[in-house]
Image (cartoon, rainbow, N blue to C red; front, side, top):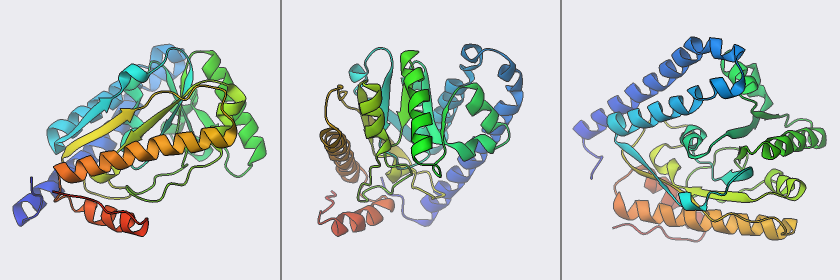
Length: 273
């Protein structure tokens, strides 16, 4: 598959534009239509969230040609646990939702101030964190996370805190290790290659196969440093493998040029066909 050439470039831009318009209009429409659900118990209103995710994934596949493959579902444990996912794009913020029975995200408190969207985050009991208050915010986040795990929910957290470009040097923060130690539940690592097909802060949505790989859970009992190094090594090793796999399958993707530059800075070489 080659994405270069005027016709392919025009079609790529058109499909990306149409998806971006659909994504925001559909999200807004669904939030407005679903407002009455905010008055009902959370478990009654929750199905609107995975429905939103499924529809967006369907449109991505049939309009853009971006297919999503999830590997390792057999590694998902029962009950409550923490999901620690690599974060390269906006895609994983909704594509992971259907994979878990009753997930809740740890998100910036500022998102609660967004009209409609913020109301849903509160009603669906997502966990806010005030990054400006540090220790106080960490304690409040930990307490809410402990309650969620006790209820059998799955806590989705992006350990790097923000989106990182595909192939960039990892930068894991302390929060996930703190939760692991304080709550004492399994942590499920998730590797991915989303940043190649949905670049951070990029307009284009590229056709191809996005892969989420769910890895075996890290069981409670490790020390903080051992846990942090285990999580980082597992997620980064598999995410790098997925980038290599993608580069071999889609060598002409323009995004791979920037990924290759980042790898050279890290002393690595990106192999393509």
